[in-house]
Length: 446
Image 1 (tube, rainbow, N blue to C red):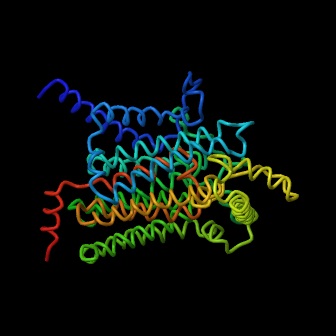
Image 2 (cartoon, rainbow, N blue to C red; image 1 turned 90 degrees about the horizontal axis):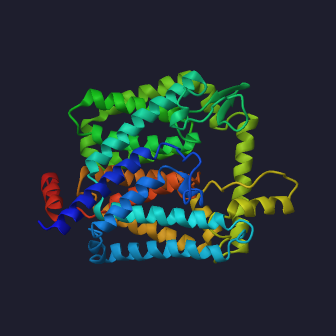
Image 3 (cartoon, one colour; image 1 turned 60 degrees about the vertical axis):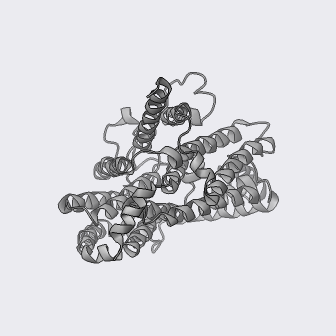
């Protein structure tokens, strides 16, 4: 082996290590204190997560971009790659027409950079990502660790002393802290080390679906059941309705695709059902409040605000159908629109829908490009369902996250969520070795 070949091999290993570190750091909302230049220049660059992302992409480039050529050998992969580049390019171009391009040009710059980072990481995952088994360990491990932290916060009804790791100051009595209100009592929702319970719910959801898929075949049944119950309880105490729906969809997909195995392991539903019943018994007033059966002011206000921003997003699309208001500029457009056209005096916020977010900020052109990325990725991922057992869990997780995207915006508005969605898409479309595919198909043949 020549020195150049050894260098490339080492660089590839370092890149794959970087992908695992990136996934491990995703549940941490860590920023650089007093970040130096250039980290202070853009909002995205202030996160610790930025470092392993650049590390991963950089070493992959030094390694000679292994795996890139395989995307030019299949039409669907080539379409995905071209559209991915066009989407990032359109986001960069949107800086020139952004709604706040003069006063706050950094809004579009930061969002365009976020998309570029996520796309580059997605390309690495799709070309030469890490072992799926190691990634499975990290996703399940993150679910356990952050699920226990979130559960402890709910029991404590406040922070548990992890501020050094980025834990927020959580006091259910304070305004701005996410709570559920029933009969005048405020119950803190699980946060772990993230700024919102719904973000934690997405991490837990992916880990749960990976665990459920693993539990269908593992010989470590007791361990699998214990992990499932821990993860499910943690997901339940986030009180994230969209994640609950995503979990139901994901488990349904895995069960249908692996129905023979699921029939043999039907008893897995018993501990999951018992965990859910215990949760309902302990928190039924709050569950009913989240279900909208009561007249709690907090839930009514939340639904009203979401409806308002859905309307404002439709107005942004109507006013700027082709180009949108510019990447990252919707919140400012919403602020001005509400101030000028209503009596409300509330700050602009993101619309809780990733598809409307893309359409409002990048126009119908951006939505078409984003939709094509999703559709081609899902198409490729489904074609590889028989390649490996983990692939089924990945597809189920992706459909669950896309369902959540109808009710939340984090997967396109924040680096953390964008990375989670794009990296799982990249991993799901990474081609499997032909020998491995043949072996799995031979094992599954009747």
